[in-house]
Image (cartoon, rainbow, N blue to C red; front, top):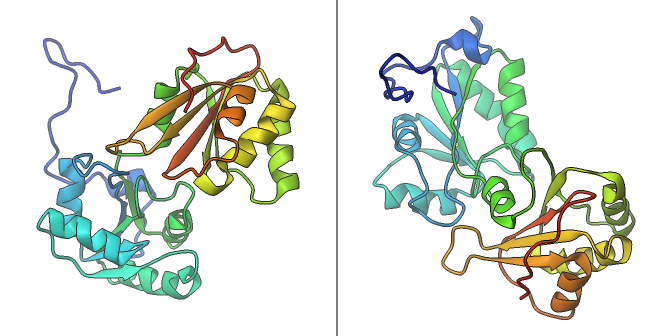
Length: 262
C-alpha cells in the first residue's frame, strides 16, 4: 500500500523516471530492460496509461501472437517492431530476446490476453532475463483470476491459483480429489471443451462443494454460474460451451452460494 503523507491522499503521482535497476535484480551486464505488460482480457478499455507508454517506448514488443497484439497496438495508434514468442518457438526465440536485451534495448513482453507469465511461456523469458542479469519490470494490470474469484462470491482472503487443470483424466481427477481437505478457495483456468467433464468429476468427488464458473470475463456476454458441483455439472452436461472459462471451487466448509445456473 502506498505510504500516506500527512494531509495527502495516499496515492503516488506518476513517476517520470524508471525504477532503480537494483530493485529488479539488474547488474552490470547491459542497459536493456524487459518489461512485462498486461493487456486486456476482453474489453479494450482495460489497459493502463503506463502500459500504453511502455509499449509506445519499447524498441521491441515480444508477443504470443503478433497479429492479435498488432490489432491492439493499432487500436491505440502504436507502431512497434514485433517478434513472436510462444510454446512452439520459445527455444529458438529466447536467444534472440536475450541478445536484444544485451544490446541495451527496451523489450516489452505481452501475452494474448492478461498478464504475461501466468500460465503462458512468458515466465521462461522472465526467468532467462533475470538469470542473464538483465533488469526486469512487471506492470500491474488485467488478469482473469482475480475478478473471477471476487465475482464468484467465494471467500477470497486466502486462495490458491492452480492454472489449467491437467488434460489427462487421471491427473485431472487427482488434482480435484486433492481439494477434499483444502480450506481455501481454488481457482483454475479451464477450456470450454473440458469444463463439463471437469465439473462431472468434481461432482462425483465433492458433489456439495460450492462452485462458480466465470465465463467471458470483461466481455459483452460475461456471466457467472453458481451452485454446487453437482448442480453445475448437471446443468452443463451435454451442452456446447463457448468462451473463456475460469473455475472457482470453494474450500471445505465454505457456505453455499446463491444459485445461478446456466
